Image (cartoon, rainbow, N blue to C red; front, side, top):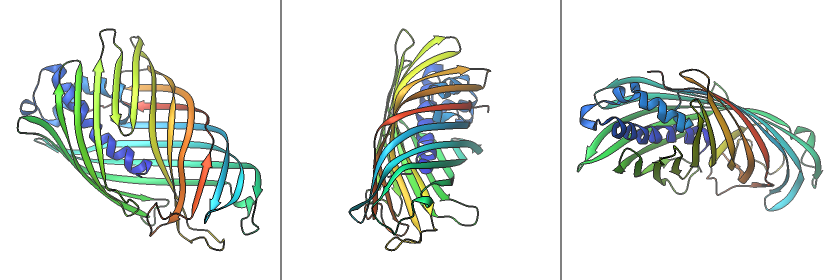
Length: 340
């Protein structure tokens, strides 16, 4: 499983490729006639960023996830149950550092602050102190990337390579991952785009390093857009007014936190706690100025998988697993659209 830090940075690279090819089709340009820099300056890139939040250069968001029942097993035995309430704040900065010809070097920085409050806890073992369950964790990820837009056998293709470092402090890097991949545009018209690609993700906690990437975008005559970016996103977006959009969709994300203050018997001192999550709901976004959007959305938050494992082992070799019920969530987001 990829973390939110790595996944957000990685998929923003891939989806930027899909958006660039869309812009080229809508403006009548070709890969040989324009550079990545020209495409990013094009007004169409801003329109693409309105559709896909991962294409925005700066994003600040806050989540409230209501109380959810949970059960936690350690080494196969249930030791905790109760309720957990979460507050999260995140920021993402996508920065194009330098461009030449068809190449781009970029830098992405993502921060995630996670606050969890526990209540109604039943503790099955005295080795766990329920007073220490509440936590406030910061995770920071930095991704450096290289990308190139080109063609292969007459088919537009977007190559990329990236390295991501993730940590909970500024003193050391807790985790490194490396990625390389390509996206091919199989079909491109003014209203439809079909893309297929894949990426090789070298991560010490992963058993399966390859991940396919499938993209489909279509705009209907009434302005409704469908945007599918598998495996992470499916969305519908309908304009309600010139600056107002209604959206509905599902997003799969992953989070990671680092714990190094464990004092419990049988639990490693340095622990990675990762989760895979699903958000399904409705949202409204308003373009308050030419380059700034504000959005509110809410729906159902589902924790698909939460596991803790030794930092030197794979995610499948976990010692702790938690199960959560689906609960409502609310989100507020402010975004800066591409300004170069």
